[in-house]
Length: 539
Image 1: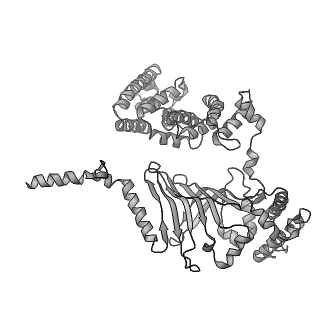
Image 2: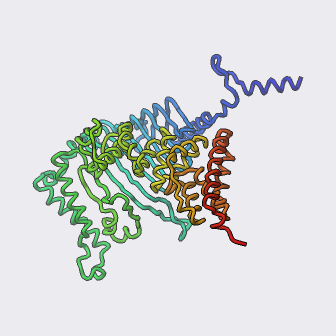
Image 3: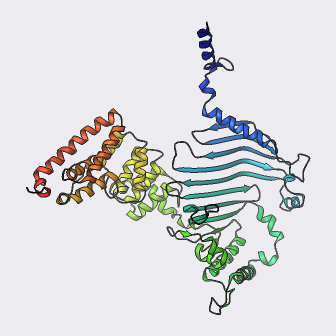
């Protein structure tokens, strides 16, 4: 009897009835989705102790790394408003983190869509500004804050965007080639270590200029007088900043407030940009003037001591369009590529890279592939690397093929992509793609002259850096060098054997054929070239 009751209880626990005819198992109730839902709900209830919150729907996806609250309503109850008139609403709020299948990246992204706030959410002394700007309430069609960090390379991208409907939008982006903290001197207060690649702040007019213009001094908005006014204002501000950090003696008696060349360049760019904006008030862009690949170390202590150091390092510029606008390709060149016209190799590469990346032309992956794939197949490592990068999330097999070519050309990041793709592809498929890429291979006979040269061939083929990766060819060279007593070459064989051991039956069968061919080639070279006589020691 007891066993019967116990069995019935277990059955009921794992098959609980749900609404209608649906029945949920116990495992359904403790699924990651339901657990995450409860975590978010608990967080919302905790926030309700500080403000009133409601939402219409909650969607979670632990694998994809996102949570979405729909029809969100928040009554923050600020100290100046006790009537509950301050209401912040949003069509949806999405918080994204790193998907579970991406182990080398950390990401935190907050996105608000269709948001608005009533005037009562502002302090009373700031509300008249809304009337002056012609705004009845604050409407934010879109707000994005995104931080993306790659663990392996320590690269980081930071992006923030906000749009106030009927007024303006602000876009801030910063790209770092390296970003982390240094705690060697003081573990309790680590200092940032940042190498900046680029940074840009864009302010785009969305109707706010017509409201702001009447509030500005007439001389400041008069195209004839504005350059002189702006020059005096910026020059005085920079001079005062320099004097606060200047040392006349250290500068050989020069004026401590004297502007540096980089500060003068900034002032000239700001004057021109403002003059252009007065004629066509669309956008203003403040960005760094760093050349591609010329990353700069952000020495915050030096920046605090002397503002000239900031301008010397970052070379800031003001314009009415970002520098990337200058990368836009001529329409005639793009049209010629789309129509299949003959292009010079450099033009073909330029258009293909632009179409694949979406920088300089609207992204068109199909046409970009048509332009670049013949060049990549001929050994163009840059074209192959870009193709591999674009195709990695779409066609991993084809991406692996192009990464093989990019690695053989020595392109940075190609071998890392090969390793990453091999973690996704079956080993049998990897071996097939390697054989396909090495179909017309010619082995260098000169490498048979020294054991070290045979070892180098094995290592290059194993890594795919400087040669097309091939475990079969790597094994062939490693067999020869290991037979001559080289321990490092024997380690190459051990590494390949371990990869095969972890694979399935299909991969092991495919490798058995490849290994047999490699053994046959190694034995042929061993005997025909009489390598025992060359590398052996006479008794």
